[in-house]
Length: 120
Image (tube, rainbow, N blue to C red; front, side, top):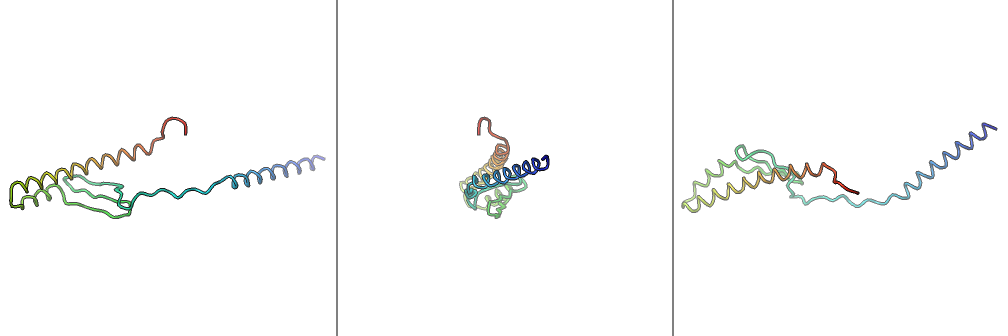
């Protein structure tokens, strides 16, 4: 009698396990395609103004602009003082903005790595 009760218990456990697996599979819904950014989205910026930056994009391409000193040296080749000043201002703004972008990317990675408070 004990063997029959044990067999019935094992069959009941097996049936409930199979039913749970089937209901879990039936309850799964197809997932939406994963969101991907535009191919030209900047994902990382390495370097500094003095040594030069490398900009990495989502599609795998990179851009390495000349250093700040190289850029400002090229600005000296313009023929009027106004154009020289404009070129230097643009170069300094470019490198300042790249440094800000580098800090923003670091903050975004830090923020994305931490869970949000409250219910989900």
